[in-house]
Amino acid sequence: MSTQRLSARILMVLVGIIAVVFCAFFLIGYDNPYEENPAFNAPRLTNLIIILSYLLIIGTLALTIFSLVMAYRNRNKSAAVVNNVPAARIAYIISGGVVALLILTFLFGSSAQMVINGEQYTQTLWLKTADMFIFTAIAMLVLAIAAVAYSSIKH
Image 1 (cartoon, helix red, strand yellow):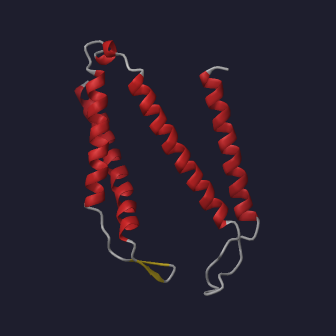
Image 2 (cartoon, rainbow, N blue to C red; image 1 turned 120 degrees about the horizontal axis):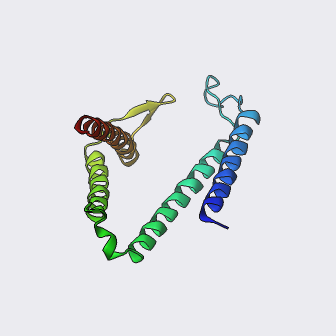
């Protein structure tokens, strides 16, 4: 089986699993009132969504680490410069830049308390982690837009 067909099948299986889980979430016991405050919903299958999210994140991290290790082990030194473009150096700079951006946005992220569902949320690690991902995504989008604008103006 070709890599493209395998990838397409895995994608379809994942989309199917996600669709079934989300349909079940909204169709089975979604309107259960929360015991402590009936103004809120307490869907029955919330734990299923959380477990699916954890499995997807763990799987993604495992495949990312595996791919990085395999790419590092199978790299070809002659492909460091392709058509007078330093491809390897660009890849290292981008990878290092993303890691540095993640670290900086985590360090400068806010740990201010939030009110969620009427209760104070004070876990500093997760507050800073949420800020890290939000600000890193915003920074990367802004940098991508700036790169496209620069490229279109230059050419």
